[in-house]
Length: 445
Image (tube, rainbow, N blue to C red):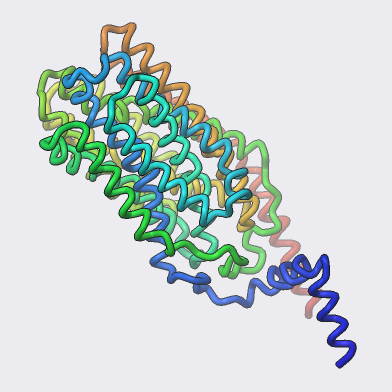
């Protein structure tokens, strides 16, 4: 008994927490696949709510409001374009600071308070005090979205079963698509009450979802997902392949920006179709609804590298076609296809990151953070580039769509080059793992 008491005192000493943590981690493979605290569906729903609030509405609700902001004389057309880019600049700042925020607050608190901050920013936008005021709060909403994008996957996915990571990631990031769809259907209804009340109504909805998901986040204990033996855990990260993925994702982000920011305005003012812009944005939102789940399943079936190439090819063609389209039926079909891309590409890139770094939560979180920063930096810089080109070209939307299609074409080239460049190395690596496995089996026998 004395020896046991002494061991207990040592375990509770200065290094006791570390000892207990090491023991928990070493026994991780024996833990249940049920997430600690809330059920798996509640954790997934909380993740979807966070992406809905922080990005789905905080960013995408702005697009269908652009014509109204101009028509109501809140801001000039050029100011509206730059204010839209403010959200993307904040998104970059949030992505850059996300890991520090996560360490400081923990994922549960960080995600809760970022959702609350995004709700507050939407409410502040209901009062058009000045351009700097509006710019600041659009920046804040973007910052909240950037933190959410980096931290939400790591806060939920490690506690879910791993057979369908693409589907699970798609479910979490489906909140982006739901937010886009809601912005296309809810915003026109709210606009009947006035522009200020529209912003306030969006803020109330986000605050409600923040409250409902408050206790849905898993507790910060050791992840509960067992990994199959040798399933990528011992494979080294290949920096070259990861860097190529970051370049590819940055180009993809540049390619999706024009339609994301200017599609509704293109139809409403560019083609002179007025309220049809809202209808087209609803169709864009319908595509966004199915994109994350569809593309996540595609990644599970084809592998995320192949899925990323395929959807990038389709999107490049769709955006190039939009640049030459004139009829509303054609634009409607293209809008559904293009709308599936901004939220749908996220779980595919996330899955590709996991393929490259293996099932190591810390490595996954760090790599996904770098990917998010690459995408955010591209979004912010390209948004200001597009705003400049838009103003200098006499508000020519088609030029923006062509630039976006060219960016997606370059992303496709980078993806293909990376895939072919890594074939011999992958074959060699898999052969080495196979030989090691055979030798290990022989030793055990």
